[in-house]
Amino acid sequence: MRPKPHINRHYDGLLEELRRRVLEMGGFVEKQIADAIHALVERDSKEAELVIERDHIVNRMDVEIDEMCLNLLALHQPAARDLRFITTAMKINADLERAGDMAENICERAMELGQEPQLKPYVDLPRMARMAQEMLRDSLNSFVREDVELALKVCRDDDAVDALLEQIFRELISYMVEDPASISRAMRIIFVSKYLERVSDHATNIAEMVVFMVKGKSIRHLGEPPQEL
Amino acid sequence: MRPKPHINRHYDGLLEELRRRVLEMGGFVEKQIADAIHALVERDSKEAELVIERDHIVNRMDVEIDEMCLNLLALHQPAARDLRFITTAMKINADLERAGDMAENICERAMELGQEPQLKPYVDLPRMARMAQEMLRDSLNSFVREDVELALKVCRDDDAVDALLEQIFRELISYMVEDPASISRAMRIIFVSKYLERVSDHATNIAEMVVFMVKGKSIRHLGEPPQEL
Image 1: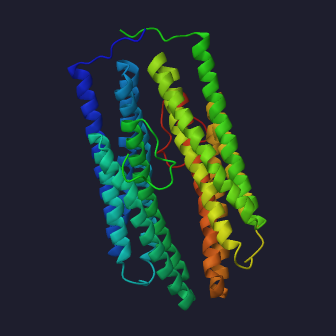
Image 2 (image 1 turned 30 degrees about the vertical axis):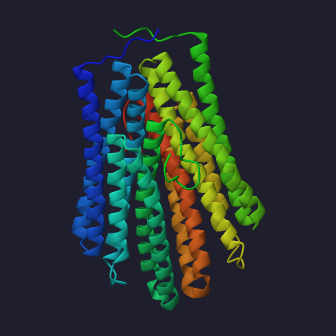
């Protein structure tokens, strides 16, 4: 027989705390990405190093949230809806940690690029970064508010990021063709754009998990994200 | 009060079934990656299309394993050790599904490359693919056997994949510098190598989760993987 879940103030407080922590980690990761792009644009290797250093904070948050979820599952035997919320938090946590790793990767490329003359002013990359950050923020808000509409918006926004990636890619290829001396720098910039694409992919993964959590059905594998469910 | 976990044949059978399914999905994903690389090497766009088509099978496995885990958590209130096993399976499942997506990405690049003259014979990419596949297999075996030694081996193998990636990268840059007409093809091949790197990253993630599951401590964020724990 299934016992009644502990519906008490302590348990509700822990769920609230879990929500708060996931948002906090998301905010931190978002800031890491913004700072990484800032370090790239400003050619500031000191800032790049600081971002890399701060990655351990993301990692600590990851471990703590994971433990918190395990404890909630072990001690409070949550029922269907909360169970899904907590297991989704665990998976979101993994996505956030890896999105944080992208900030680190961007900084590594930024430091390499900082040692060579600048290839071109950065216009599209900061735009792409802002889009990816917004998607991350929206995906986490959709999670804590259980807002399917917002989650579906994130899935649609992914197309805009992909289009921008395609544009950056084409522009850099033309640089490479015109001047082979630019190839290794152009490659590094292309990698940065791929890291940002992966951030937006993580946000999309999170959004898809939110739809699954709320609706109990998976949109992950339908091809185009539906306009509504 | 925490009730005793249902230790009965039905429950044990379900855990065994979960193990079997995770391995089965891993085997399928491994095959998808092997077939994708085969399609690339043989310039066989028909095979590439088949791999892309079969991705829906990976996706179905993903959804089914996820549901199985949720049911196990909801109905059987597993205690500490099983709880960790089941939540780890859920996360591994997500990694496997995304490793499967890499096979699809490889096929897309293979189909593009098939429309242009071959740039060079593929030697390192199939080697890299075999390494990534082996890491995936080892990581899943470490999970079902709860084998920390094997998991640590996977973490160390990741360095060999990174070294090979670096070598592929350098070679292709030299192609691009010598002949700008090769740039877009070389870029596509570099992307394939990055997809394979991501497969090995997923395997490493899985291995790190296994260490955490068995030892209860995270090695994810220690920098170099330790030789032993």
